[in-house]
Image (tube, rainbow, N blue to C red; front, side, top):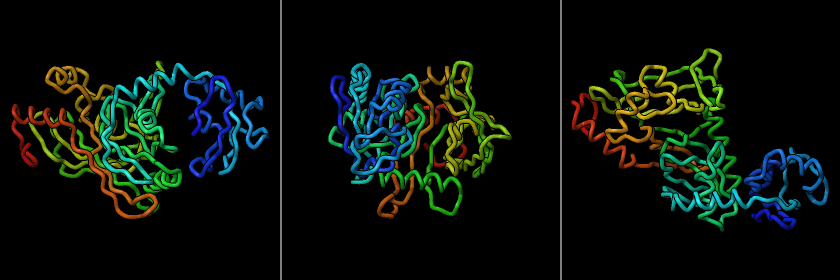
Length: 330
């Protein structure tokens, strides 16, 4: 894909990877650092042309279309992306073929730039793989969460993954992705298996920060929790997502009185300070396993990411200090 120029017009030929994408989404992706309002303005003014003609921002691009993109200044943000990608080095690859790429996302890095982040996993991957014509996130993980993250390498694979995640979450009989997390909570969880169905509502704080709470008028949310290990003060759970709501695992657990260790949004803040002194300097939430059908071939895929070493060491320190009364010995 051609780079946007600061000084000259770029002619972008649309391939099958961009087929069906909205014009505004293509421009926003390519014009990092350009205000969204300016991107929409240049389309309305006719400076962006498709096959030599004006087009609406909602126009669905077709393979073979030629898009004219005027000069725009993006150097400053591009440099921030380069610096950020360089800092993160190479991301661990769990699986890769022609259709998709699966990485083990570290905690502390966003999946994409924005909301105060100048770079993220997807920007780092694009910088590290300049030959790749198409790399797009198939789903998201919170900045504080580590583990299995899928990236589409073809638009057909990406759209199939999106449909799989969407229909599976709706429970329409379509096989979805089975997403499982390992999570350490504060408190003694007693149920070996527990289905939690609590509706979730998204809202904004006065600062503009996004939050979620349990509310009767919220969207349906279903998490299955399984007890893996338990000590005097902590419990290690597996969380299986049946729906994919924002902060679902975090809010369900906090509402039930079992906040995630190290969760800075919904956790026990006094306990988090103590845990940081004891070596847990991040939220203990890890996307450890995803099972799904290959988006193009249909064969079964099971993708796993081992628990990060820092989390393993913290569990070992808990076991050294407290009696474990459930689960395999850690």
